[in-house]
Length: 583
Image (cartoon, rainbow, N blue to C red):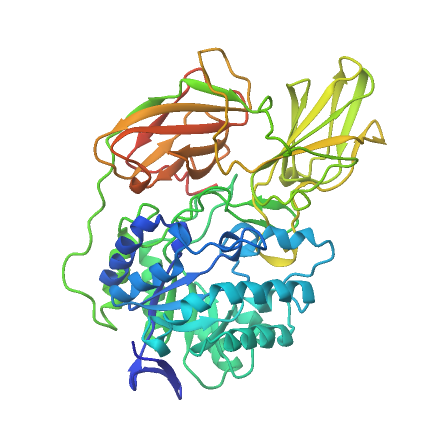
């Protein structure tokens, strides 16, 4: 592969002028058996490059563990891009934002009480260096300087929106160079943050989704020479629970792309294909109010969540064809889908009575956070004994993020960080009643100053003004559903509980799981965690990739946090329901 260089105000590749026409494609949001399909569709739209972040928190879920296989096999993804004739822009962080849990920063960093993320804090820098030492060696052979597809590597991510410490960016760039990264380095920031987030001697690029002429002018004012590039050209947006499904018309986005390309700039479409924040990996924002992001990362992108071309795909292909060669032909067709069906969920397993594995329960005077328990995602079940019967006012001073309160196993209420709720009143029926608080991590904040987002009960718990002590803390990360005690029956279920069913498949294909009547929870199919659902919307279906299914009998399991509907079933439908597009 030729090497990307800068010649005056242009990029060159192998000595020839080159314009980057790229699209965002996050390997960790796509089933690995579908990587090749998505990359092929990127080339067919006219892209010559794809961009991906690297999620540190998935690759290194604990300080002494590092994964680079399966859905995290970054070298394989890069090899597939090269096989498709595509270049790659690699954005390894350490911070990535991406509407991803904690902006990609591992939760175990927050087990250090005074750590300062994205800074020159020695504790943070030692962890970053260890991450790069593990990640980069397998990637080096994929750099363009060694014949691979990676043209350029980004330093940090939108740092100017967080801080202005140039020495931190210098340190990260130095780490990349010391670990063998010898391709072009670049930074990206929104136009107003270019001065704060820039690194002298490193190519600066801008992020925006409209007013291209203004954005590029701001970039040129900051950087008088060098190629103009929009690293995140926002062609859609993400959704939050309780909001509406954000869309942008293909016509409007295509007109803006046309203007940007007419000005001679390079571009990376954010996103070309958004994919899915599977499992517990969605992020959140907290600008005076906590707002978790939905499971779908459809992003109203040219390829929808299932990888099918949209009107925007065709419109962008037409625009790109004005400025660069586009493969001949009509373009890709939608992939086959499963026929609609209803799947009964006949088995149930109560969550609160789930027996902890030996050694899993931790005793403490005050509730421990997830980070103190060494836990990244999921839930924590907290329990203590109340001293006496009578009227009670329970105060949870810092809920992160959603607490369901039970007394002797019966629900008494819910407190949500999103709504700034901290107290609930109830009557204690007897001396020695058991108080249970089930706390869900709904996604660590991924942007801004709220990154230090520890989860669980992060503050004291008071009963009638007196602090409660003597707690048991049970981490419930639900990496596996093995060990659940399922029974079959039609008895009404108050919840929280797991519900399970089976269904046959002849030929595996994509589908969407629709959940009418269910309130809030998570879905697994054949042990693969699809993500969260919530009747609050806007999203009302979950994408089920075809490769998760197998010929023959398959299993689906739901964790429903509230009462189950009278008809305990789900629907498989060929199309999604991402919700209304206006509030």
